[in-house]
Length: 350
Image: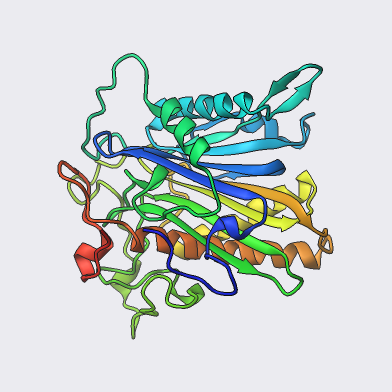
Protein backbone atom coordinates (compact mmCIF):
# COMPACT_ATOMS: atom_id res chain seq x y z
CA UNK A 1 0.00 0.00 0.00
CA UNK A 2 1.38 3.42 -0.97
CA UNK A 3 0.48 5.91 1.74
CA UNK A 4 -2.48 8.05 0.56
CA UNK A 5 -1.77 10.65 3.21
CA UNK A 6 -0.67 14.01 1.84
CA UNK A 7 -0.70 17.13 3.95
CA UNK A 8 1.46 20.19 3.33
CA UNK A 9 3.54 18.11 0.96
CA UNK A 10 4.18 15.38 3.55
CA UNK A 11 3.53 11.67 3.02
CA UNK A 12 3.20 10.63 6.67
CA UNK A 13 6.34 8.55 6.23
CA UNK A 14 9.75 8.54 7.88
CA UNK A 15 11.11 9.92 4.61
CA UNK A 16 9.42 13.24 5.41
CA UNK A 17 12.63 13.73 7.40
CA UNK A 18 14.96 15.41 4.87
CA UNK A 19 17.88 13.23 3.87
CA UNK A 20 16.25 9.89 4.75
CA UNK A 21 15.41 7.28 2.09
CA UNK A 22 13.72 3.88 2.42
CA UNK A 23 13.75 0.86 0.14
CA UNK A 24 11.83 -2.42 0.34
CA UNK A 25 12.32 -5.82 -1.22
CA UNK A 26 10.46 -9.06 -0.52
CA UNK A 27 9.90 -12.48 -2.03
CA UNK A 28 6.29 -13.71 -1.99
CA UNK A 29 7.37 -17.35 -2.33
CA UNK A 30 9.81 -16.94 0.55
CA UNK A 31 7.19 -14.90 2.47
CA UNK A 32 9.91 -12.68 3.89
CA UNK A 33 11.67 -9.46 3.05
CA UNK A 34 14.03 -6.62 3.90
CA UNK A 35 13.68 -2.89 4.51
CA UNK A 36 16.65 -0.52 4.29
CA UNK A 37 16.89 3.03 5.58
CA UNK A 38 19.82 5.00 4.22
CA UNK A 39 20.91 8.59 4.52
CA UNK A 40 21.71 11.13 1.87
CA UNK A 41 24.67 11.92 4.11
CA UNK A 42 26.21 10.03 7.05
CA UNK A 43 23.81 9.79 9.97
CA UNK A 44 24.23 10.14 13.72
CA UNK A 45 22.73 6.98 15.19
CA UNK A 46 21.96 5.14 18.41
CA UNK A 47 20.04 2.02 19.41
CA UNK A 48 17.97 0.81 22.35
CA UNK A 49 16.97 -2.85 22.71
CA UNK A 50 14.31 -4.43 24.91
CA UNK A 51 12.84 -7.91 25.28
CA UNK A 52 14.32 -11.35 25.47
CA UNK A 53 15.07 -12.39 21.88
CA UNK A 54 17.10 -9.61 20.25
CA UNK A 55 19.05 -10.30 17.06
CA UNK A 56 21.32 -7.53 15.77
CA UNK A 57 24.45 -6.87 13.72
CA UNK A 58 27.08 -4.15 14.23
CA UNK A 59 25.14 -2.34 16.94
CA UNK A 60 28.38 -2.15 18.93
CA UNK A 61 29.38 0.55 16.44
CA UNK A 62 26.66 2.72 18.01
CA UNK A 63 28.10 2.42 21.51
CA UNK A 64 28.80 5.81 23.09
CA UNK A 65 32.39 4.72 23.70
CA UNK A 66 32.94 3.93 20.01
CA UNK A 67 35.24 5.82 17.68
CA UNK A 68 33.10 5.99 14.54
CA UNK A 69 30.40 8.69 14.77
CA UNK A 70 28.50 7.90 11.59
CA UNK A 71 26.36 5.22 10.00
CA UNK A 72 25.32 5.01 6.37
CA UNK A 73 22.27 2.75 6.50
CA UNK A 74 20.19 0.59 8.84
CA UNK A 75 18.77 -2.76 7.73
CA UNK A 76 15.62 -4.44 9.07
CA UNK A 77 15.21 -8.02 7.90
CA UNK A 78 13.05 -11.07 8.21
CA UNK A 79 14.63 -14.51 8.35
CA UNK A 80 15.59 -14.64 12.02
CA UNK A 81 19.36 -15.11 12.44
CA UNK A 82 19.69 -15.91 8.74
CA UNK A 83 18.58 -12.35 8.02
CA UNK A 84 21.66 -10.92 9.70
CA UNK A 85 23.32 -11.52 6.34
CA UNK A 86 21.15 -8.76 4.85
CA UNK A 87 23.51 -5.97 5.89
CA UNK A 88 26.16 -7.49 3.61
CA UNK A 89 24.02 -6.69 0.58
CA UNK A 90 23.51 -3.10 1.69
CA UNK A 91 27.24 -2.72 2.33
CA UNK A 92 27.94 -4.00 -1.18
CA UNK A 93 25.67 -1.39 -2.77
CA UNK A 94 27.08 1.43 -0.66
CA UNK A 95 30.67 0.43 -1.41
CA UNK A 96 29.94 0.33 -5.13
CA UNK A 97 28.75 3.93 -4.82
CA UNK A 98 31.75 5.12 -2.82
CA UNK A 99 29.82 5.51 0.44
CA UNK A 100 31.43 4.60 3.75
CA UNK A 101 33.68 5.59 6.60
CA UNK A 102 37.00 6.75 5.19
CA UNK A 103 40.10 4.85 6.30
CA UNK A 104 42.84 6.43 4.19
CA UNK A 105 41.99 5.24 0.67
CA UNK A 106 39.41 2.66 1.80
CA UNK A 107 35.67 3.18 2.35
CA UNK A 108 33.88 1.01 4.93
CA UNK A 109 30.07 1.34 5.02
CA UNK A 110 28.78 1.21 8.60
CA UNK A 111 25.47 -0.69 8.46
CA UNK A 112 23.81 -1.83 11.70
CA UNK A 113 20.89 -4.21 11.35
CA UNK A 114 18.26 -6.17 13.24
CA UNK A 115 16.14 -9.19 12.44
CA UNK A 116 12.67 -10.58 13.12
CA UNK A 117 11.41 -14.15 13.13
CA UNK A 118 9.15 -15.14 10.21
CA UNK A 119 10.28 -18.70 9.51
CA UNK A 120 6.96 -20.39 10.36
CA UNK A 121 4.55 -18.34 8.24
CA UNK A 122 4.55 -20.69 5.25
CA UNK A 123 6.60 -19.98 2.16
CA UNK A 124 9.64 -21.76 0.80
CA UNK A 125 12.45 -21.45 3.33
CA UNK A 126 14.57 -24.16 1.66
CA UNK A 127 17.01 -21.66 0.14
CA UNK A 128 20.05 -23.96 0.18
CA UNK A 129 23.54 -22.91 1.21
CA UNK A 130 23.12 -19.13 0.90
CA UNK A 131 20.22 -17.26 2.53
CA UNK A 132 18.58 -14.78 0.13
CA UNK A 133 18.68 -11.80 2.45
CA UNK A 134 21.87 -10.15 1.18
CA UNK A 135 20.43 -10.03 -2.32
CA UNK A 136 17.08 -8.72 -1.06
CA UNK A 137 18.91 -6.01 0.89
CA UNK A 138 20.97 -5.05 -2.15
CA UNK A 139 17.75 -4.58 -4.13
CA UNK A 140 16.11 -2.66 -1.29
CA UNK A 141 19.11 -0.34 -0.98
CA UNK A 142 19.14 0.35 -4.71
CA UNK A 143 15.40 1.10 -4.60
CA UNK A 144 15.56 3.46 -1.62
CA UNK A 145 13.72 6.73 -2.19
CA UNK A 146 11.41 9.17 -0.44
CA UNK A 147 8.29 7.21 -1.53
CA UNK A 148 7.80 3.64 -0.37
CA UNK A 149 4.98 1.23 0.37
CA UNK A 150 3.72 0.24 3.80
CA UNK A 151 1.75 -2.80 4.91
CA UNK A 152 2.84 -6.13 3.40
CA UNK A 153 6.18 -4.97 2.06
CA UNK A 154 9.84 -5.26 2.93
CA UNK A 155 10.65 -6.55 6.39
CA UNK A 156 6.94 -6.45 7.23
CA UNK A 157 5.91 -8.91 4.51
CA UNK A 158 6.15 -12.03 6.65
CA UNK A 159 5.33 -10.40 9.98
CA UNK A 160 2.53 -11.51 12.29
CA UNK A 161 0.98 -10.40 15.59
CA UNK A 162 -0.89 -12.42 18.22
CA UNK A 163 -4.17 -12.22 16.30
CA UNK A 164 -3.50 -11.03 12.75
CA UNK A 165 -0.96 -10.35 10.03
CA UNK A 166 1.70 -7.78 10.85
CA UNK A 167 3.28 -5.34 8.45
CA UNK A 168 5.52 -2.37 7.79
CA UNK A 169 4.23 0.95 9.09
CA UNK A 170 5.42 4.54 9.10
CA UNK A 171 4.33 7.97 10.32
CA UNK A 172 5.70 11.50 10.68
CA UNK A 173 5.16 14.72 12.60
CA UNK A 174 6.41 18.31 12.30
CA UNK A 175 7.31 20.21 15.46
CA UNK A 176 6.66 23.89 16.08
CA UNK A 177 10.26 24.80 15.27
CA UNK A 178 10.06 23.06 11.88
CA UNK A 179 11.96 19.95 12.92
CA UNK A 180 10.57 16.78 11.36
CA UNK A 181 10.15 13.49 13.23
CA UNK A 182 9.53 10.20 11.46
CA UNK A 183 9.05 6.59 12.52
CA UNK A 184 9.22 3.22 10.78
CA UNK A 185 8.23 -0.16 12.25
CA UNK A 186 8.30 -3.77 11.08
CA UNK A 187 5.49 -5.07 13.29
CA UNK A 188 5.94 -8.69 14.41
CA UNK A 189 5.19 -8.70 18.17
CA UNK A 190 4.23 -11.55 20.46
CA UNK A 191 1.35 -9.37 21.68
CA UNK A 192 -1.58 -7.68 19.98
CA UNK A 193 -1.98 -4.21 18.47
CA UNK A 194 -5.77 -4.29 18.74
CA UNK A 195 -8.01 -4.21 21.81
CA UNK A 196 -9.66 -7.49 22.70
CA UNK A 197 -11.35 -9.15 19.72
CA UNK A 198 -12.41 -5.88 18.13
CA UNK A 199 -10.97 -3.65 15.40
CA UNK A 200 -9.84 -0.78 17.65
CA UNK A 201 -6.12 -0.10 17.98
CA UNK A 202 -4.30 0.45 21.25
CA UNK A 203 -2.64 3.42 19.52
CA UNK A 204 -6.01 5.10 18.83
CA UNK A 205 -5.44 8.12 21.14
CA UNK A 206 -2.48 9.14 18.98
CA UNK A 207 -4.08 8.67 15.56
CA UNK A 208 -4.03 11.56 13.07
CA UNK A 209 -6.37 12.08 10.11
CA UNK A 210 -7.94 8.60 10.35
CA UNK A 211 -4.62 7.10 9.24
CA UNK A 212 -5.59 3.67 10.56
CA UNK A 213 -9.33 3.77 10.14
CA UNK A 214 -10.40 6.53 12.50
CA UNK A 215 -12.24 4.07 14.76
CA UNK A 216 -11.17 5.68 18.02
CA UNK A 217 -11.35 3.63 21.22
CA UNK A 218 -14.09 1.17 22.21
CA UNK A 219 -17.10 2.78 23.92
CA UNK A 220 -16.17 0.95 27.11
CA UNK A 221 -13.11 -0.94 28.23
CA UNK A 222 -13.74 -4.35 29.73
CA UNK A 223 -11.58 -6.52 31.93
CA UNK A 224 -11.13 -9.06 29.14
CA UNK A 225 -9.49 -6.36 27.00
CA UNK A 226 -6.49 -6.65 29.30
CA UNK A 227 -6.13 -10.41 29.05
CA UNK A 228 -2.71 -11.40 27.73
CA UNK A 229 -2.75 -12.93 24.26
CA UNK A 230 0.53 -14.19 22.84
CA UNK A 231 1.47 -15.39 19.40
CA UNK A 232 1.29 -19.17 19.18
CA UNK A 233 -0.46 -19.59 22.52
CA UNK A 234 -3.94 -19.92 21.00
CA UNK A 235 -3.02 -23.32 19.58
CA UNK A 236 -0.57 -24.30 22.28
CA UNK A 237 -0.10 -22.36 25.57
CA UNK A 238 3.53 -23.43 25.49
CA UNK A 239 3.88 -22.84 21.76
CA UNK A 240 5.28 -19.32 21.93
CA UNK A 241 9.03 -19.38 22.46
CA UNK A 242 11.72 -16.68 22.72
CA UNK A 243 12.82 -15.38 19.35
CA UNK A 244 9.50 -15.87 17.53
CA UNK A 245 8.50 -12.21 17.83
CA UNK A 246 9.95 -8.74 17.52
CA UNK A 247 9.17 -5.18 16.57
CA UNK A 248 12.01 -3.56 14.65
CA UNK A 249 11.75 0.22 14.61
CA UNK A 250 13.60 3.32 13.45
CA UNK A 251 12.87 6.89 14.47
CA UNK A 252 14.54 9.76 12.67
CA UNK A 253 14.73 13.50 13.11
CA UNK A 254 15.98 16.36 11.00
CA UNK A 255 17.42 17.98 14.15
CA UNK A 256 21.14 18.12 14.86
CA UNK A 257 21.85 15.68 17.69
CA UNK A 258 24.92 14.27 19.37
CA UNK A 259 25.20 10.53 19.68
CA UNK A 260 24.33 10.77 23.38
CA UNK A 261 21.18 12.73 22.52
CA UNK A 262 20.29 10.18 19.85
CA UNK A 263 20.58 7.50 22.52
CA UNK A 264 18.04 9.35 24.68
CA UNK A 265 15.78 9.67 21.64
CA UNK A 266 15.87 5.90 21.09
CA UNK A 267 15.05 5.27 24.75
CA UNK A 268 12.10 7.67 24.73
CA UNK A 269 10.81 6.28 21.44
CA UNK A 270 10.48 2.81 22.96
CA UNK A 271 7.48 4.21 24.84
CA UNK A 272 5.65 4.30 21.51
CA UNK A 273 5.71 0.51 21.38
CA UNK A 274 4.07 0.37 24.79
CA UNK A 275 1.32 2.69 23.51
CA UNK A 276 0.58 0.44 20.54
CA UNK A 277 1.19 -3.17 21.64
CA UNK A 278 -0.10 -5.23 24.57
CA UNK A 279 1.82 -6.89 26.10
CA UNK A 280 5.17 -5.48 24.97
CA UNK A 281 8.87 -6.20 25.63
CA UNK A 282 8.06 -9.77 26.67
CA UNK A 283 10.59 -12.59 27.02
CA UNK A 284 9.42 -13.64 23.55
CA UNK A 285 10.23 -10.33 21.85
CA UNK A 286 13.43 -8.87 20.46
CA UNK A 287 12.30 -5.26 20.24
CA UNK A 288 14.90 -2.83 18.92
CA UNK A 289 14.58 0.91 18.25
CA UNK A 290 17.22 2.77 16.25
CA UNK A 291 17.38 6.57 16.38
CA UNK A 292 18.80 8.58 13.47
CA UNK A 293 19.56 12.30 13.14
CA UNK A 294 20.26 13.96 9.81
CA UNK A 295 21.40 17.35 11.15
CA UNK A 296 19.43 19.32 8.56
CA UNK A 297 17.75 21.56 11.16
CA UNK A 298 19.35 23.20 14.23
CA UNK A 299 20.11 21.48 17.50
CA UNK A 300 17.26 21.52 20.01
CA UNK A 301 17.44 22.83 23.54
CA UNK A 302 19.32 20.00 25.28
CA UNK A 303 16.56 19.47 27.87
CA UNK A 304 13.13 20.78 26.82
CA UNK A 305 13.80 20.52 23.10
CA UNK A 306 15.10 16.96 23.26
CA UNK A 307 12.18 15.99 25.48
CA UNK A 308 9.76 17.33 22.87
CA UNK A 309 11.50 15.43 20.06
CA UNK A 310 11.47 12.21 22.08
CA UNK A 311 7.79 12.56 22.96
CA UNK A 312 6.87 13.20 19.33
CA UNK A 313 8.96 10.22 18.22
CA UNK A 314 7.15 7.92 20.66
CA UNK A 315 3.77 9.09 19.38
CA UNK A 316 4.84 8.67 15.76
CA UNK A 317 6.14 5.18 16.46
CA UNK A 318 2.83 4.16 18.07
CA UNK A 319 1.02 5.38 14.96
CA UNK A 320 3.48 3.58 12.67
CA UNK A 321 2.81 0.28 14.44
CA UNK A 322 -0.95 0.59 13.96
CA UNK A 323 -0.58 1.71 10.34
CA UNK A 324 1.56 -1.32 9.53
CA UNK A 325 -1.14 -3.75 10.70
CA UNK A 326 -4.03 -1.71 9.27
CA UNK A 327 -2.38 -1.65 5.83
CA UNK A 328 -1.53 -5.38 5.72
CA UNK A 329 -2.75 -7.15 2.59
CA UNK A 330 -4.73 -10.35 2.28
CA UNK A 331 -2.02 -13.04 2.61
CA UNK A 332 -0.86 -14.97 -0.45
CA UNK A 333 -1.61 -18.63 -1.10
CA UNK A 334 0.33 -20.88 1.24
CA UNK A 335 0.35 -18.39 4.11
CA UNK A 336 0.46 -20.20 7.47
CA UNK A 337 -0.09 -17.18 9.68
CA UNK A 338 -3.22 -15.36 10.88
CA UNK A 339 -5.46 -13.27 8.55
CA UNK A 340 -5.01 -9.57 7.90
CA UNK A 341 -6.86 -6.87 9.89
CA UNK A 342 -9.06 -6.17 6.87
CA UNK A 343 -10.12 -9.81 6.63
CA UNK A 344 -11.32 -9.62 10.22
CA UNK A 345 -13.05 -6.27 9.91
CA UNK A 346 -13.98 -5.75 6.27
CA UNK A 347 -11.42 -3.37 4.80
CA UNK A 348 -8.77 -5.65 3.30
CA UNK A 349 -5.87 -4.10 1.42
CA UNK A 350 -4.83 -5.53 -1.91
